[in-house]
Structure formats: structure tokens, C-alpha cells
Length: 89
Image (cartoon, rainbow, N blue to C red; front, top):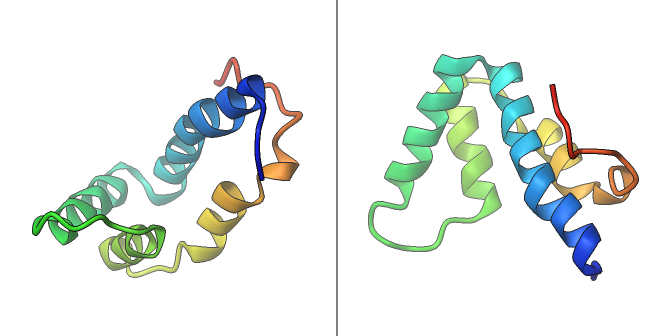
């Protein structure tokens, strides 16, 4: 899907921060930080990490599956294009 400049800013840049915020709330701060550390360690050899590796890191950190949560937030962008994400609580 191609976005115009405004949609790109909304969906990719602003929404990305919202996704991470929502993930932290759902996982709890401890699990979220542990997942990020695991993800960083997975890329310690310098290879480019994928979204599947990100999900695997979050899963490993908490012992839960985050695939459905992240799939919804990251890949169903059409649902969010019309949302106002310029302000987030």
C-alpha cells in the first residue's frame, strides 16, 4: 500500500509510537523491556532483524504469544488511517 505524505506520517511515524506504547501497556514494563533486550541480543551479530523475530523476542520474554496483538496493530493499517493520532493519552 502506498501512502501520501500525510498518511505516511500518520500511519508509519505516529502510529509506530502508539503501537509500542500499547504493547508496553499490554505486556507490562518489565516484560516489554525484557523483550526489547532479547530482540537486541538477537541482532548482536549485525544481521537485519524481521518482524517475526520481534514477535519471537516478545514471546520469549513473557512466555505469551503476541502475534495476534502485533498483527492487528502493525498490519491492519486500513483500520487506523482515519484515526486522530496527533494526541495520545
